[in-house]
Length: 351
Image 1: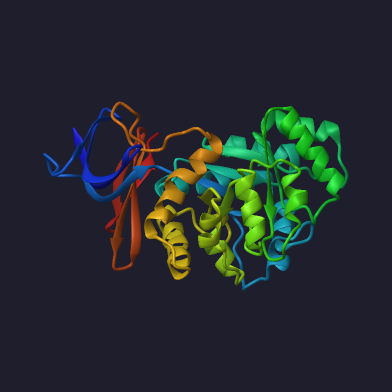
Image 2: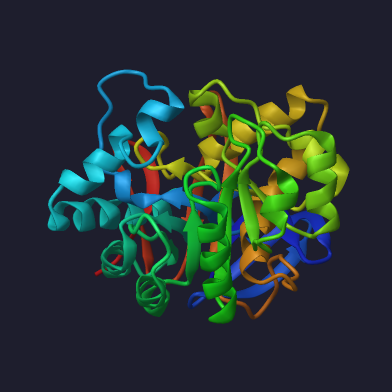
């Protein structure tokens, strides 16, 4: 029996206690003092879902600081040139490494906006078994056959924004995703405010960023029960500040994502630190930051989920500990083993 101790996140709330793990499952959750020495102690939550990534650009190394338009604007941003010019096997390999690092970084899975049409989706499916894939067409106008091809492989459609294609094209893609019973999501108001009514009319499952949104926009998202994924480190790279406290005050369900792999490593602890710093600077509560990480991504994938550790469940757990260098995370999960390199503890998938 292995034990983890600290502040335990359960469906009934947080309490000081311990989790006992036996053969990859949670054997017991108890309050108070741990009956045996614990492997690790800290904030103990179910391993979270990374609610927004772009895994395809994991192999891109930046030689200088870029603006948002220079780096990611389709179709000629540096990222898109990299994706079109890099051999397939290199893209698959870098996405596989990114997925493996994400597991060591505390995440159980991730929701990826995958560029490159149906073939781009097939590459990520080949690279990772932990990805929820939202594909993006390559055609300049709507092609029903292309949309169907994407949706046969992907879990839905994820758009860069409604400014990048015609609104009718966006409507057609949303209809195709909804008609297939799959997800539809879109970047919105990242650095410039978008018309929230037009976006919500597409019935998205969630939005990403909303840094340039107004309070009424956030209230409309809350009223429509459309979650927002915040990517604090990525936003800060471009000098943007997500209004996290305003989102929460408006009643928006907020999730946490790491965004572009070329900008931010897949480290849930680093993302939690950045998210918390923004929220606290706006007068928010640290516990709300943890809630957004622990519950946000999982509830996007399963809206009715009651998130928390419980006895009898599979032991897929992330433990966060604050150090002088910031927060660090260790993940405990079936199929992962502990390894220590240069004094750094992490978990890597066994083969």
